[in-house]
Image (tube, rainbow, N blue to C red; front, side, top):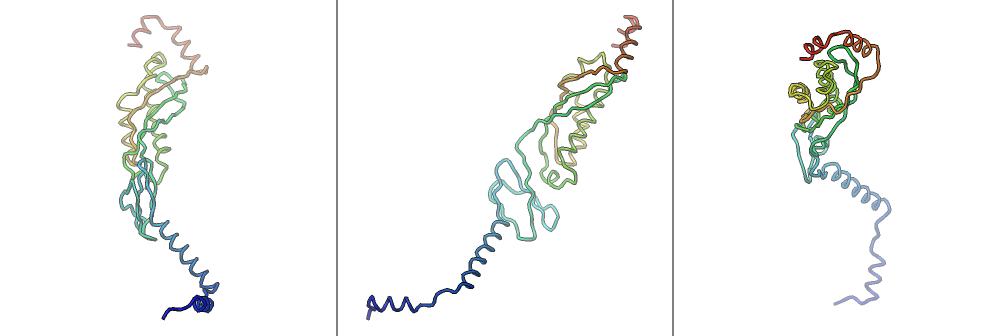
Length: 210
């Protein structure tokens, strides 16, 4: 036997309503669930990788795509692997004959090992640039001021090898290193160099440049 419309209305009026504390606990429960989902799931784009740490130890690389992490046990560090990036270094250096020059160099860097990059104690790119500057200074120190035309241009393979031997520890690789500009400020060292070359004979200059 069906209930009439009046009976249904009466039943609805008598149905127990959710109390305010119950609603508050339901809302809190939903928020907790959403926070847990947000902490264990993340989307990793194509140009990044997620270095996963499990109990503070590297546990591999995940991504791209949707990545799930174990709550509390795992955490992730995002590492950009978007191809090569150009970095510019401006530094002071000394030529083989003691003249101070200001050098501008360009290096092309990329992430070769996301785990090492993401777990390095030092900031990987800054540490690599310090090594690049040292390699450029070594390159300049191997040439005299008269070889200024040689200084500008791509550095030799030894400079790249020297950089990559150190940068590998941070998961970074240099694929190209070039001195793009050399500026010679007017200093006492430059004046001494000019006086020395002015007093030498053409044959002496030829023999020293060869």
